[in-house]
Length: 326
Image (cartoon, rainbow, N blue to C red; front, side):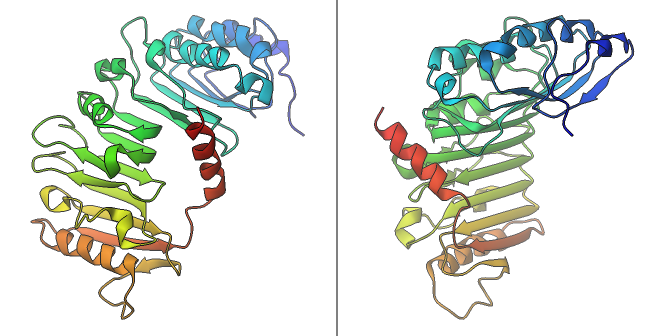
């Protein structure tokens, strides 16, 4: 049986450092602020924004809190309250002096519009080392993100990944791990410029949900990248906009490449384009990438996976239709 509301007696646990609960559990008013030894809390749930707002404000009083995982399940009436949702995100990011912050939706439904994080700028020197904002698409990367001087790991869902977004992300000085999910790039391209930005990045994962968007790594880009993971759609060769190897030949420090291609006629977990005797769009795209990987100076591990569909692709198509009418 799930705990509906935590007992107020939990405040007697003066040395409680880690608390793992269901997102459905509720805290009595004033309880959180009294858990002064708390270092980790997972998962704090928002089912009703208005009932939990006071609890959210108490997090700023927990000076030892280092990891906070939040999940929401707002009702439709609140989701339509864009101003309230922006205030919620602002309070989480700007008032929580934590090292690791994870914000996500309980459902794989990302909401009716991309959110803006521009007003969520942390008010003090930010100690964030890991920041995950997932299953909630944002409209752009906020300018303040480039000033997160301690951030090492970042996961974001971005509706359209523009050159300005890439520039801001590349300016984060300590970023080692970056995972992005997007529908589109500007004019079908996501350019990773050379000789500037992403100086410390070791891992880069990029998911492109819609057809017609591909990455392009320019010479000198991501100079210390070791692990690249790409996920894109190839219904037709036109889906990759005439790209060849996406500029992978410029990523000379790579030692591992993972490629997931969906929109294929068959699914295959350990796919080898060189062993495939059939002619297909997925094979052609994979073959070009594998040839580029082979030309790299290191002994690079390269793997491919084919899938018929993205997953719950209907949900994402629903978001596209909603946003297009804004």
